[in-house]
Length: 383
Length: 84
Image (cartoon, rainbow over the protein chains, first blue to last red):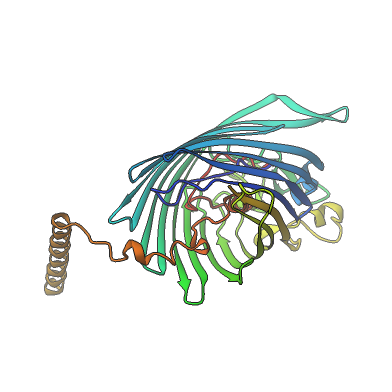
């Protein structure tokens, strides 16, 4: 039951996206979850001023995660996302708009987005303003006679608004910098209907009792980021990025990423990256509440816990030609692997006390950690 | 104490005045690009693309966003999140 995905905004005005097709297969594996599926992206210019794009994306999910094992049962489902977008170039201004639709059995989401990019100061600076609006419908699946179906008594909504400002600046003949600011606001049902909190209950043999999460109905978020991309003298590129995030739920997060791209002769391009992320917990998060109805808002979602993670990424791309298809100007085949290691600071593996309450008491379980592998294989054709 | 506050205010006013003069100077004379179009060969190299592989970067953004509390400011438009 994943999320609605993203649509890239052109980073530079005055230039339309290239004509290209990307066919990708992705696979995420970790923490008892496997998510895999295809993604196909097509970008095509029409004349000198107009371009369109379309994306078909699918997640085939098989989940027996720690959350599922604690308070639900393993499941399989498919999420399908379709998006279309268009860009119009007028002078030094690029207008972009698009629509994204995501459907899974218990979550339907629609998002519309719009952005304007303007080149200025001798095309050294590009300023982009963007806005998106999302409308989600949330359902809850229940198993009846062995068949999963929507609970007729549960239907919630959530709305999202995102405002963005981005400045891209050519600093020297070898250096480009970008600054991004994004303000987001969510309203409606923002919790997961499946996950639950737990509170200390001496009368329960496992030492705790599960109860529904209670989230605030609103959330506002501020994210600032900056990056520098430098062309090294021997034809390689080094990128450094930093992002600061804070929200009305008390989460403060920092993201650091370094990326290095090295072409090898004519055919190969290698890419290595390291990403560090850390966040503090939401103000209403607790792994184990002291008693029932402890506060107005209560959550035990891992995404709201305090944790830090490191992700190492490697990518190899091979450029090749297809002799008989002369309309294809360039083609590449790429393999990518990312290793993600998450260490939670205040989220415990409650399965220990659930399955062996005599040995380990609630609140004394080992801290949970998650290692995941992300694989991507894709072919890109420029025409 | 009063003297140090006065000095600090004087410096602040000087800074504001300098910024205003600089801004007005910029408004009167157009900024000349300090990196000429013919000097952007390196910047036009494919390895310097801000988003070289959009289908891949969009997917990875999605992977991180569903597992982290933070989102946004990645140069992409986001949408609602089920994350159940």
